[in-house]
Structures are given as structure tokens and as C-alpha cells.
Amino acid sequence: MAQYGDPEGTFSSIKTVAEPGDIAGYRTTPQFAVSVGKFAVMSLCTFGFYELYWAYKHWDAVRRREQESLSPFWRAFFAPLWGFSLLPRLQQLTAVYGVPATWSGSGLALAYFLLHIAYRLPGALWLVSLLSFLPLLVVQRSVNELNRAVAPEAPRNDSYSGLNVVGIVLGGIIILLAILGTLVPLPEAQGPVQVST
Image (tube, rainbow, N blue to C red; front, top):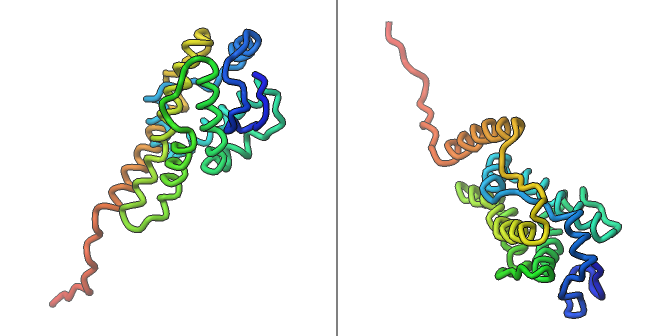
């Protein structure tokens, strides 16, 4: 899909309707599809590393379809910052193909950024950062609708591979231990025990 003007999709000079060539291009290179349930579970159990993979896959699809010179790896590595570019682009992309988003890409990017840096909060408040994937679920739901409408033959990615299951089990155990370690107070240390003989 050719864009006119701002490459990030924030000005009104950009294309607002997909042309037949754009639809064919999208069908050959659709955005990353993953069920919202799988996305939530994988993000939670991998401490957000799945979100980086998610960002990489979306940037890679943009790069290949738009023929842009960008690095999906570095944009995924700095996903909380590049979310301010990716999420508005995905919002605009869904609208161009007739799947209007009822969400704000910039607003969700801000929510993602704030939740992502919440790990710095004191005490048990850091646990909020585990929910950094929530704003991305809204975006992924729209992308899945877009794929169903424009590229119905695209893979759905709603099942778990063996590696996914290993990540869920190991990550789930670590998450539970982290939550317990944060919420359950340690017993107070007592002085040395006196033994009488």
C-alpha cells in the first residue's frame, strides 16, 4: 500500500482507501496473526518477551509489504518506544482496509509504555507491569479481524507448539514464585536458639 506524506500515518494526507493492488499485496504479506488468548498467555508467562516477538513480526510484515528500509529487530527491541509508531500505523491500516478501529493507536501506545515501565514501582505495585500486554490485545483483535476480512487464508496461529508449552510451564512457575515472593512476607528472623544442657 502506497502512503503519501507522513510515513507514520498521522497526517490527513495519507491514503484512506485500499486499492486492488494493495489488497493483493496484503494477502501475500498479512500482519501477524495470533489469537488474543494465546497472546495473553504467552505474554504473561514470558514476562513480556512475547510482546517483543509480536512487535518484530508486525514490523517485519510492514517492512516486506511496504518495501520500507527499517529494522524490525531494533524496533522490536525498543518496542515500548516504537509502539508510538506501530500502533497508529496498525490503526490506520485497519481503517484503510475497511475494518475501522474504535481505539486510539497513540492512546494505546501510551498505555503500553506506562505499563511497561511500571516494573519500577515499589513493592507489589510492580506486578502491574505484568499486564503490559493488555493494550496490545485490543490492537491484535483488530488485526485478526483485518486478516479474516482481507486475507482469510492467512494462518490463524491459535494453537500452542511444544516450545510454547515449555515456555508457559516454566514461565508460569517463575511468575507464581515472583508473585508469592512479593506478596507473602518472609518470617522475621529470630535470634540464636539457646540450647540448655
